[in-house]
Image (tube, rainbow, N blue to C red; front, side, top):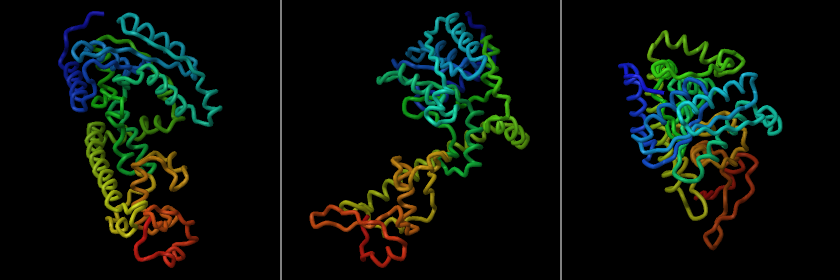
Length: 344
């Protein structure tokens, strides 16, 4: 399909995409890229851009579509995605999954189950090499995510929104609004499908998109860009606090444990239990979390508030190792049992 001469707005949109790719070093030369392609406007713009500029970046591009078998129009979307790629010579891979049945079997909601199926498929295609998985998240998606995390009471991690890069996953369209991706598709005459469930208020994200975002846009027409700036600042703060938490733990290390007095001396700004993570992770047993970032925050916060449910005293052995004691029944009991130098 021949490309039309670039118009001003389309060129600006492409420069935005290139700016995000360059800023976060998303596309190392020679890498393979698996583009998640639902058939919607965002993923159509992403797939078209990557495939059109593949020689410029020295990359190989393939599109991956997952048919979740959840909607009556799912087969239509699959066929539209297949046709889109066939007309442009884009390698295309598809997987069909009965997400509803799988969600029931695994005890998950359909949305979360579908996400797991998609990323598992993308990683399978990407392999273990230098490949990248490109998803079509936009600044509009980021704004919705930040608002949803805000009402859940998230910390700086959750309020920093959608990360531009997470491991091998990249989001080149994160600097564009949904309106800009549709303008890109209009300029290049790219067909796309519309997910009718995007207009149903049964889903929390749709209620945010259809209700909250338009109201906030009356206060700031450049809402998405403003929230991108806020997300960048919060992400920097989160990275700094994470590094400081790691350094504090390292300094407090004593043999086989940690000195509680050193941890209690830390500033009282508490980013503890949630650590900015989604609410579903709070259901894990306290003190059993395997996430190192969250563990650092919870660990330091527990020491400051003398929470012996998380920090159980250990008695050092003669050989320098530590033997864990049973947790005291109450902080008062713990205080009576502590020695002058407390070791976890």
